[in-house]
Length: 202
Length: 146
Image (tube, rainbow over all chains, first blue to last red; front, side):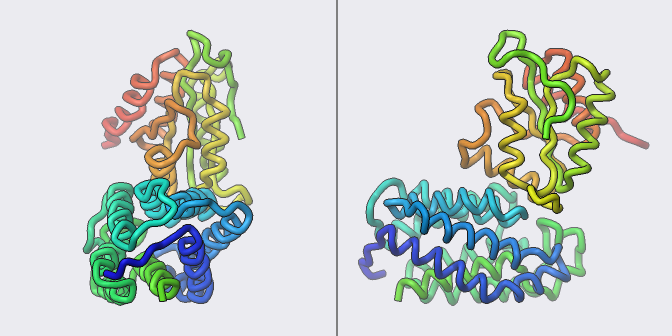
């Protein structure tokens, strides 16, 4: 991977791009959440990331780690559904792992994101294959070793791969076999996060 | 959003454990709090607060309502947080694992929501410490119904 140096402004742009793509895709996320969830994922994510953008505009943190930690904190307090604590934990743990450095490398971001993904798995008690966010996050982080674009593709493929899976976590798991055939909304929004990252890294 | 009576002075030696009840629904959290305080004998009970639904009255989980509720019942002896399901569980776990919003000594108690709430409020009102309150609430899993 190139020796790109990422500063706080890059991470603010990432969050802004994530908010924008989630805004565009909100209806689709809610649609995916209708047959197997409670049809609120798009709206919840939209509300959460809009609050993150407002917070970053009003009081922009000085370091990459602080940007992500503050964004995570904001998601936990403003989403209102399970995606709040899950995405909040992802960003917060990633931010804390990055520490207080004013700039970080892509490799440092990758290993911090890996710590964030591990924290998400611990929080939800889930593993890849359970038809959750992890099915997009895990391949996304792995492919980040190659490039931001590769990560976006791998996360998107991971989200698509949840279609034939049976849900083992969350509300969708109550549906048992009837959860098969639907793409997981959390994996889908996780792929959008990687798409936003690739977009701002161009 | 406090329900029941808040007793004891902050940090006193005889301070009682606080109990927070987190549900996706405001009315469920409030009603379970009323039930638990009522079954604990009413009157001089441990501090209990409900944190149900979202601030606008909808269904969901609010980190802010949970944090406010936990602070309102914190007397320095710890706070037992009981939750119903899904995002309520994840939000409290995330706040405890990653955050500094909840008072020190706040603990997620693994217990059935209604039965655990009654057990927690009864034992906390009797002056039990946080370990004993959590154990009593968790034991409610063992009371089979058939």
